[in-house]
Amino acid sequence: MTAVFLDTHAFLWFVFDDPRLSAAAARTIEDTAVTKLLSVISLWEITIKRQVGKLQLGMELDAFFEEHVTSRELELVDLELSHLLAYDALPLIHRDPFDRLLLAQAKVMDVPIVTIDPQFAEYEARVIW
Image (cartoon, rainbow, N blue to C red; front, side):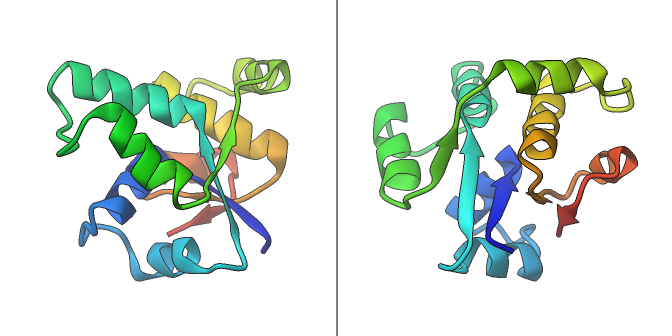
């Protein structure tokens, strides 16, 4: 395995050392030989949740991104047309648009996704948890 896609919660649970992060997920994220992909969609989701008070970061947003994205050398994935077309082709099993976009990106890039979400498996996604 050379790269994995991080679901938003997996990224946050890793950053905050949350015990809900599985041992397999933590090992994968910590593996220096594995490229960790993080979508700008996750950053957008974090921003929205912070704004509406559902997420406390303990610091300003720019500092959080600098400390936990840039300094960890995560590879940011932009939203591309191919991702939107893959998103459109997904059946409406999962209703969360953020999760569906992340799933579409992982499928287009043909990499497993680190997530606890059981609905991802219904799309025959390669899941690490």
